[in-house]
Length: 81
Image (cartoon, one colour):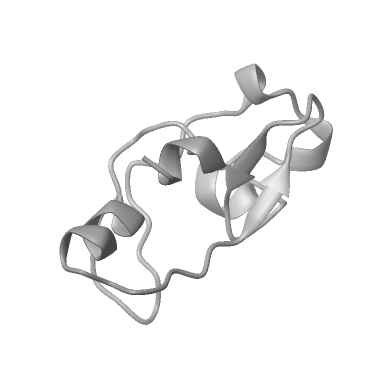
């Protein structure tokens, strides 16, 4: 995960986009709409944490080359570890 990589190289500051799920969990995601990252037309704010879909196996941002493994949308608490 990019925030973990940033911490391992000594980054002093991180900017994270966070949203709250329907049941009150804070998750890290740039978009509240999950279409781009999961292929599902859902809003984080209207979805229970346990029902969040897996991320796509490959996300290729225009500004960088890379692949993100399929995994769950990370909770804010996990980012703090």
